[in-house]
Length: 489
Image 1 (spheres, rainbow, N blue to C red):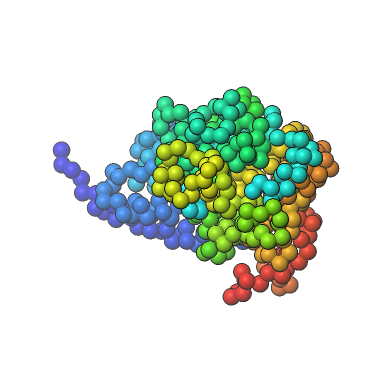
Image 2 (cartoon, helix red, strand yellow):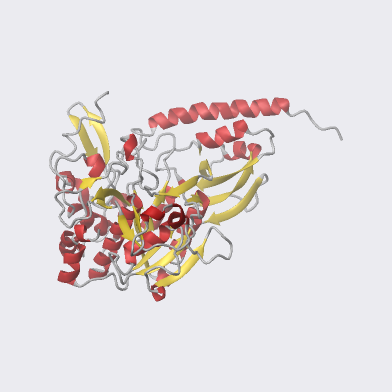
């Protein structure tokens, strides 16, 4: 049988993909201020289109994540698509597809976005007393007992300074049949910050989900599988908090990104989600990583406490990512916490321990990054939940932000609501233990003739918005005094 000449078909396909690239460029320009524009359009990531443009054959397949619209489904079998994982809770499907299938799905009414299966990394840039946690322990006696934190990271070394009986489950999404041991060393360090013997919540329980390999890299699809697992097994293990000390530079609005959608569904399920802001602050504004760019999650930036108990000399680190978020202009981070040169447990033989022997200490290893700051915030959330188990995730976020020290003179896009204060948060939690759910979304920022203003995304389910008093959260004049971001118009 003669082989048909596909050159015309390939040219037609490339022309259509070229149109998709042009369309995506326009969408990217619009997402910052046009909320929910063109909801019927399937968002195909520019990078995925480019990957197919560079493919040498039409039958090339590329790993992707397909995000479905709310309540939508795809056929169990789809020609040209090899499925790896499907989550009804997240509305996401991962697998490999070819060029022709991409075009078909780009026109499907049930599909929201199609993105390449991206690589993400730990937010590591190669403290306890400074947060007033020691005072809070002495005053209240809480240690996180009875609270469970899910760590989606590089695993946990069995030799970590952490009682194994407090590790309720280990799930490995990197190696089939793996034990979620930590070949990189990042997850072990975060676990120590959250719930180690010298951590913020030294009696909290952990669920360990490994999504990062021995080089600190992971796939978006594995993070989605881990999020699905956490939501599915939340009641079985009593999971309260999810820590995501990882991320990637966003390439689309939080409204369409699959991991953003996953963290919002986890939040809707009642989980408190803490994410690191990212370590791209030296590049300036709009450097917040996903999923820390999501309005719902608690996003932690890093502060340098200079290894002193006194807080007066502490400064936001230069590497801590700055807001507002790219494309959407969400005010981030939500707050800052110690993240510089944090001493924590080491995973023996791990990549970090082997390649950075100068970081090793008598007690473990000293690491820096917003990853560490996120661990401090997650540990603090565990203390709050032990004191008031009835606190909702919305209330926890509000307590942490309202009680933070405002750091006058520091750009709100660098420090958010301010510097984490564990003792003040414990005090404020007594007043907010019965407030229930409300719209705790971080606000958006917009420019108008009078200057810069904040406004909230539409409240969920008509719930009242607690953060309407922005001056109480961010400090008087914190936004109006900023002129750097908009200086060039």
